Image (cartoon, rainbow, N blue to C red; front, side):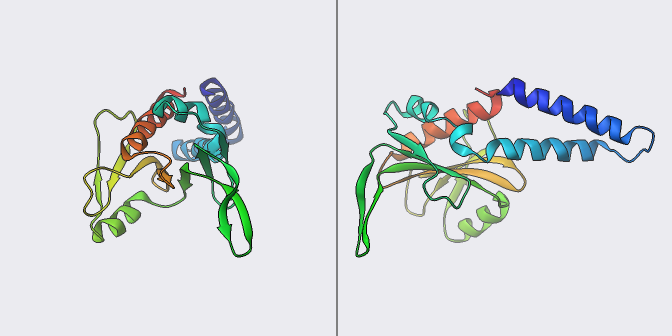
Length: 186
C-alpha cells in the first residue's frame, strides 16, 4: 500500500513537473494539493484502508463482518456479532449487530472539537499514539468513548462503538493500532 502511494506520488510529481515546465505556474503548494487529493481518495474506502484484521488484532476479538452498511458516509462497520433480525421495527426486521464504526468525516476537527467542548466533552492526547489524534471523553465519564484520528485540516476518522461492541479501553486500543497504520502504512 505504501509503495503504491509513493509510486502514485512520484508519477503525479512527474506529470505536474512536465505540465508546468517552462511556464512557471506549478508550485510546491499545487503539488501538495494534488498529493493530498490522491491520499484522500485512498482513505475514502475505510473498510479497505483499515482491514478488519487490524481491528481484530487491536481488541483480540473476531470481527464477523466489515462493511459500509449505511451506504451514505465514508465509513466501515466492524461487527462483533451479526444477525438478519437485529433491528426490530414496525416495518420489519433489519440485519445488523453490535459494531465498531470508523467514519471519515469531511469536517474541520477544530470546529467540531469547539462545539463538543461547549457541551462539556474533553479532548485529550495520548503520547503513545503514532498519529495526530484526540481521545474524546463525554461529560461525567472518566474514560474516552471515542478516538479521532486527524487526516488533514478538513477531515478526520472518528472511531467509536455502537451497541456495546467494544469497551472504552478497546476503542483506545483500536485508535492506537489504526494510528500506527496511518503512520507506517501497515
